[in-house]
View (cartoon, rainbow, N blue to C red):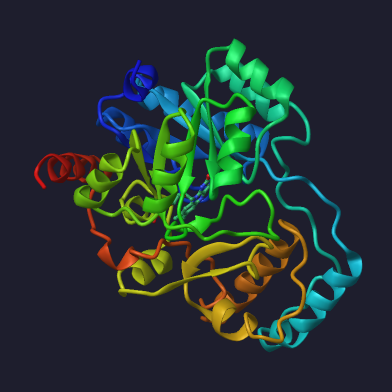
Length: 347
Ligand SMILES: Cc1cc2nc3c(=O)[nH]c(=O)nc-3n(C[C@H](O)[C@H](O)[C@H](O)COP(=O)(O)O)c2cc1C
């Protein structure tokens, strides 16, 4: 059975799950148009995740997927956290705010307990995907038993092999062009492989279906990935501008400014690609201190952004975007799917 048949969708186009940007409306719009809609639930509480899934099910009868973070939860190194906080004390003061005295773990991992697993088993979306790692074996078994397809992001060969060995159904090949967080399993190593090369590499060494993600903005680029052996493409940045996304006005304006992007771990503690701002230009200098673990670093970034934004400085926001963001188009999600399908069939 082909991947599309297995998922029950018409077009080989996935909306990338995007925590903070995904909405039930956007997911349903993509699914109703024949693509695979998605919800990025990695930053949601159980209750908020449940509400989003139920709302999406109200808006569409078509298949969609939900996404969670699968990092190894660690406690923060207090010395590293305190040195990091101290570095930003003057900045907070500049915006009439106080730096936090400690950093909180603001997002749980799917692996911490079975609460999110139970929510999936209860609500039964067609598929579930994971970023930053692989769920526990008992979690994979439970999803398989329930007939829910599983996907995990791979950024290099070794991660792809580990995903296959764990019995996951689909590999999302996330290239270095991708917007948002790198799916790297370990923050100590990023092979930074281009999407096209990663697709070819995984295709050569694995029999699992591969979904190409990273830098795909139009149907020609999507077609190329299918020609390289991907069974579908996953687009994030291209959909952020759509009316039904949750992106705020500042984010939308920034996306249309033909911006440049860079990867930084200073915002959240994990490498992520976004529009270049204060983080890349002021914090990511050669003398940068050790970054506290994910997601503790994000706690400070969110507080600094809130304080700065109150004074009109939007330069500490996290405007995630892929390296081809300059090619973004202002379209409704359903029109974008139609346009991509048209471009894919007419090279
Ligand atoms: C705003 C934004 C948020 C993202 N959030 C998530 C997320 O919550 N989970 C995830 O697996 N991937 C996330 N990603 C990465 C996407 O899954 C995908 O790899 C990426 O969007 C592909 O590159 P592109 O943005 O150039 O299309 C995010 C990407 C963006 C742009």
